[in-house]
Image (cartoon, rainbow, N blue to C red):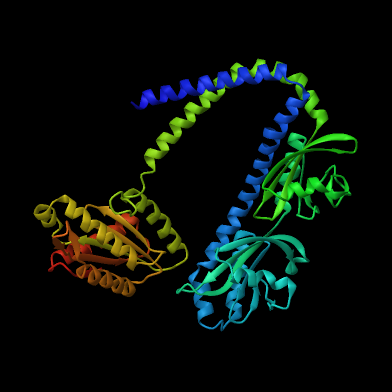
Length: 481
């Protein structure tokens, strides 16, 4: 069945490719310069626009991730909630983030004191009366977790900077400040120049007033600061009305094809232009080039499709990372994250503890009520464990009725307390099965803290031994080694 689906897929793709190329070649032979201009405006320029937009999104993805880590860092929350007693600690933290991730700027603004902590010092106190501080009070009132804002960076000689402003909430969900990082627009600017040189297209950004905000190093619009100088005002009005538009206009005596796209992250408009001279040359070459490479491209695309489809199929088979019954990580995925987290904790000299949990007399539930009842218990226990651990902890189904819980930054004493809390909560659990039977279970838990030089397997073996002791000394208890 799978082979037949693949065969049908490739037959369909082949027919579509052959039909598409024949249609394009025939159209390229018959259509006029105007038709090719429409093709350029509707497809090629939007594609370049999409590529530039993808570059911008990729450039912003990393700083958004960094800001998210800062906003959810327990150090930041605890430091604020403890009264911001030592500003040097926050400055040192921001400096470390700035150095590690090589950002231009790194900051935190406290809601309580309005102090603007920078990675170098306390920069200022934000105020509603200062125009340059409006961003903070806007972020405070947002419902979204973060915003991307283009502004001048006062701490870096008013350099044009893209800021990621991320809301920081305490453990009760109350707003306690804003944090984030800044990056320059230089990388985006280099990408613009790269695309301009590769595709011989003019690429630049404008704001809603028509002011040119970014352009390539050798732009045709050098010396021009506002597109109102050479396009009709009605055209600018159309550009700022919608997300995407296609236009033609005359500039310096030449017809120009224009595609505009609104970039919500920057609140600017991306402009991609193509001169008509290049279009005329493409008309002459298009038909002959397409005929020559038609068969080659079809073969190449089919080969790439086959390789890609096989690779993705294999990848999907390998990505069975979640246990379908409990929704927890399965054993393979848990082991992968286990290894990564353990190396990180060892490198940072932080404690790491492990709990192994086994449901007592689980076989009796399956024998007395059936496997559906056993599945219900597994789901309820998994849900309860998930509600009792921290977001930073790792929970997985180890096999059958066994679960592993990896506790980051947790010593043996705290691990025992966590284990007891879980054991007590599960002992009070009552699951209604088929609206007539109330099922309850207990668990035995083994607890261990990682020892220096200990491998993953050795660590798991020790906690397994502790669980074995718990199972053989009355169950419904915790034991540690």
